[in-house]
Image 1 (cartoon, one colour):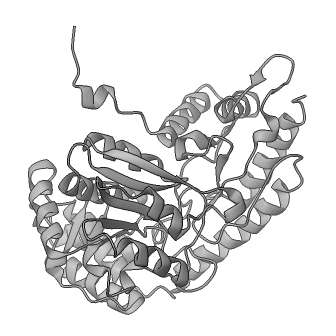
Image 2 (cartoon, one colour; image 1 turned 180 degrees about the vertical axis):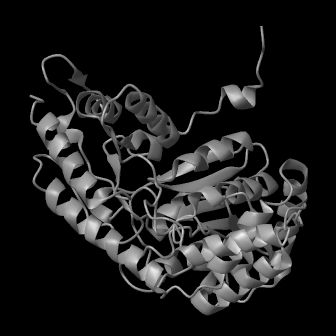
Amino acid sequence: MTTLANRINNLAESETLAMSRKSRELRAEGHDVINLSLGEPDFNTPDYIKNAAKEAIDQNFTFYPPVPGFEDLRKAVCAKLKRDNFLTYEPSQIVVSTGAKQSIANVVLCLVNPGDEVLIPSPYWVSYKEIIKVAEGNAVFIPARIETEFKVKPEQIEAAISPKTKLMIFSSPCNPTGSVYSKDELEGIAKVLVKHPGIFIIADEIYEHINFVGKHESIAQFDFIRDRVIIVNGVSKAFAMTGWRIGYIAAPLEIAKACDKLQGQFTSGACSIAQKAALMAEITPPDTIEIREMQKAFRERRDLMLKMLAEIPGMILNKPEGAFYIFPDISYYFGKTDGTVPVNNANDLCMYLLNKVFVALVPGDAFGDPNCIRFSYATSRDKLIEAVRRIKEALGQLK
């Protein structure tokens, strides 16, 4: 009998990937499943980026790349940070990885010792807590609710800090809520954390360009805290490049070197062809027609979803300002049944909708709020309309 290590036995499966797997199983059985569980743009990677990858193949970029990424890509990331965020970094402070998830894992494993505490505003992206678990750290959740647009206050952060606090991690725009922190809100958070010199900050900015309220704001813009901020970003969301698997960090030099060292023992450099495609994405200004059209489509889908969901009794909504998620409170339906299936929590509700009307969603427990469920509207308008029609019909049978 195989005895697995505690670190894998204690690790939970990603709930978003689990729901996607169940959706594929039902689809394989012949059911018409609408999957609103994955955070994946339904757009194709722009042709000019695909052409850059084809050219890289023709030019034989097929050998091991440098562990932290090709120099030209790291320079392009620095230029992007200067152009879009008015931040100055050197290529030595950039580490390119196999997706933003690996970037986050690299940083956590390089900073967190067993027993260290990591502050996580809640709701949060599902993998944060599990990555911390692998590092043998302890996640400390700071709750925010729909009434406050799912944003935490500086005083909440202050109250959560202890002598064991080593790191805070958050996303803006946020997965799963779509919340976007303003410059003033970020400054308030930075002023709390700067008083505690041993605390670092991971700013997950992967949804930077899917922002419906204006310019993206980064907590790294404040000079008094920047030497403790690690920016995580990538090309997956803004350029519809989820399968290319390219993310990166911009970090203090010591942390960048540590991540380079760690990555050299785990995966080495990210795919050489994908890096050349990402280079073309990084040199692309954010006001190009492809990005503008994607933003426009996501905004229209958000507004459509909010309008349709507001017509469903008992669903409590707020208006997300970025990303492509809606995270409504659906606790109104807890304790109800269609006469056969009881719905006692968000997980029950998601399984009820998946099995009854073949719409896949993710329960809020996965993100730290058991009263909510996550809708991804990164799919076509027609599918969204049909999905909500099915959901409304199924929920109407719960009494």
